[in-house]
Length: 169
Image (cartoon, rainbow, N blue to C red; front, side):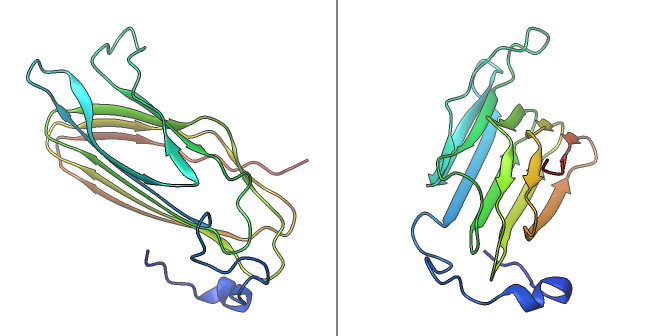
């Protein structure tokens, strides 16, 4: 995972004292690929995941788009803490569609020495359609979080993309 830490995050790259960056459970990855099957229904053809990120089996519950798989990404690790690094890559192939969300809000815990980071990449081919609508991200007081998103989209494709950040009470 490549993310450039500069500017305002530079002072906060001291290694965490408990579990260093890269320790199992601190680096989560998800890679999902959607394509059409032989009948014209979109399916999740490829998926890879590394805990603490989990991918739920696709569901088909949208009455207006019954051939669109709806997939939830879950985290089994609790809130994001110092040194957590996550990567998400989504590919929607020609003519396919997908809805991706999270099962709950993402909480970003207070941090003392480092930061938490997410790198996302979206690749949509011709005539692809994707909705990426995760639940809110909630940073606690003194949280540090970097999200780096890359979108590659064909001119005929459609992406509904939203991120919501809420202050903690």
